[in-house]
Length: 285
Length: 262
Ligand SMILES: [Fe+2]
Image (cartoon, rainbow over all chains, first blue to last red; front, side):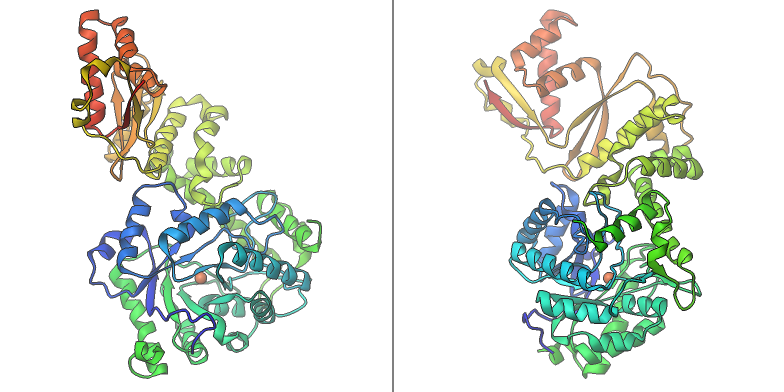
């Protein structure tokens, strides 16, 4: 299924992590593309930027941020956006994404993806800010659904209603984190498949897969383990809904050798291949 | 912005940074778990993530202090210095100053000096890229201009003066050896230079005369006055030769990015 921006299907990717630079630069790994944490490369110079330029020479890159704080009631950080735009000019990413969350107020960055109350006020606020960011960057951005552990008594709609409406009104793209849908569904007691069904499929440009930690009464989004069975099942459902969408595994802690992540990425390839028919790339063309 | 949303975010943030519970009134219990436990996930993650990032940036300080004492330091620092940075990489920038000015750590000056070494190396790591000149550059200079030459150092380069043996502690931990007992630096302050050569951060101790020249050259003093300054602390006839050796060493180490005639 094509997305409205005609962004390409990049295939199957991984987060670019410093532990893997040398294996990646050696080539022959078969990973189709890489995602960077934008903030890690918003530096003046040095090895990280140098390695990024080298990886970029041979692979598509997408930029994924954690500090845009799109739902914060602090003013938009124009310095941040300026540096983000400059990095994008250097890297020419396939697209830029960040999360539906806030990271702090009163000038503080809590360095966490904090939950949004699903109110009409928050919706208006987020829509207006996404629009301004897109105007500033001169391109649509993709917004990712975050994992969350609490719900607010003041919420006036369901998360999927909020996300769908936000996407339509802000005219933005979506990064669907399948694990986050599963985690939020378990934590808040909703059906994750119904969540996926509510997403506007033509806005979905990327999917995340990741591992989590099950604590019995709730699940924490840890990115430190393999993708779980139920999340693979949900991924199958997502591929049915969204078609050939660039998919990657996020691993941020207890990072294994590159070969292990490549093997795990093979599961995503296989599932997508089974749903879409042989040759996922051909199916997308 | 004054609104229900901004008030909620302020209460939520206070719940994380100040340990207040007001925000619990905004949160509902989930089908399986109470709101205090659920909000506790954020509380725990906030402190854990920031203290962990300190332990990456100050790895050898962490090894020197040991896990429990480092953890305590991290929480004390976080309480006073919530991050104001887009990248968590800079969150720990004030840790050396914090160690220097807060008991009980201030009583052990090797702690803040060890932290200062690690911070300087981290800063050098992602400093702007310079284009160092080679030694051959000097041969292109008209000897008549020598005394009027000034030197611009690589943007990654920074100097530290240490009053303790923190460099030896740093070295021992890096080599997995038992660190020496903390002590005052032998023969007065130890002059350190930290810089990045290519993509590798480096550190070396400088002789006192070289450090003096380096600091003055970094301030823009030209080669002639540098020689005169050196002549006040050594055999005057030998000073120009010693100064030339020092400058050649800087060029060989890739420390000089510009030579100008003033
Ligand atoms: Fe994600």
